[in-house]
Image: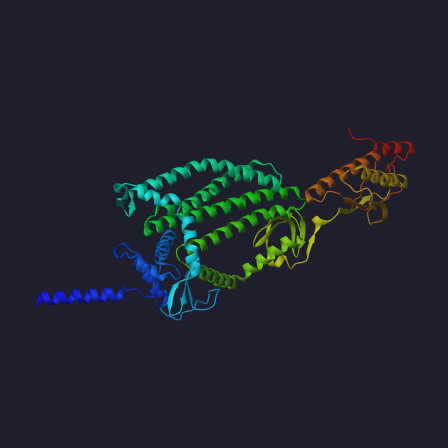
Length: 534
């Protein structure tokens, strides 16, 4: 009874197996399953696998089916049958042609697709016609010959890798190692030459950045070379997938590194260019733009990393967009300040170092950041003005003036003789004309009125130095020369006072100031102003 039951179970299992693994072309899922199943080592039957190829004789169809399987293995493409449709009337909405079609790997290999011919599903005629060409590109001529001449011991496996494949990997590494030293010199020469063609600036910092950029570029080339040569070793699909994932991860890391170094090179060149321009705002843009580009490179690198682990790029971009909107809504002030920063860099209402008046804030612009602008007041205190507010303020930029105007009144004593007043005015005019820090085309030095305690002489002059510190230095020089002129002429400056005139006082003489109004002496003093200072 037990033997009869065991025989019945074995017979039933064999019937189920025959029913389950028969050739079936009724839908995309069944066709792909038929193709791959009959090319597995445990169920190898290329004649049945060739049934999925349409329009070729038996031998050609077998060759195409086998090579198509090897191409899929070499690309590390695994079929997820849970996602392959079983609908015999399925129509892919992404297909460029009409009719019933199914693209197996739309992102990685859009050329491989199935189509419904009459009542069955086959690999398309376009796919079959391209298989041999794709196979020849991926598997060089020596790949098949190597497998034939390798002795039996070379085909022994260790961790799913045959011994001859280990040797092939070592040779590939050795070739890559030799190419590294050759390509490094070539790539450096090309980058250095390109930099001089684009913008002819010789700088050790730029040269050092180019050297650092050369190595990852060479490694990227070698990674691409290794990726192209790996299929010739005919590795197990699991091993190939692991190596391919490792190579892709390293390539993404190197690409991030390359773009980060490229940002540094470009910003180094831009910094040199900004130094040659009049605007100091360009210099401040360098760190802001560098930080922005660095953040953008890292963000895109993270997105690429996610796609390597099977995340759909459209889903990633959609998630990033939704996340960006959520962050923007949660930080509206930050977004407004960022937009304000962009408007400041576009409009350039001021430069770094300009003396500005913005509302209640008066001072020198020190930095312009992503969020705010730093202004240092005359008392050295710091004001942080949000860029969103600063871009809407009325900004009086005194740093953009053509000249710095300086106006003051010089008060001299009431008892100063007219001859000395005239000489004093003429002398100040000559000082201004000879002073290099003042504008000689336009100035005013005039006796303008009678104040309560002094005779007022208007001094209205324009300094050519726009910097605030330079203006104060120019004032100092001008003031000292005026004081020396007044001392030479014997003119005294008035201050608030009251004068009591006493006509008769016992045993005292009348107080009187003696002014020297000798014309010859006055002329000598004024002529001395024209002589250069030794």
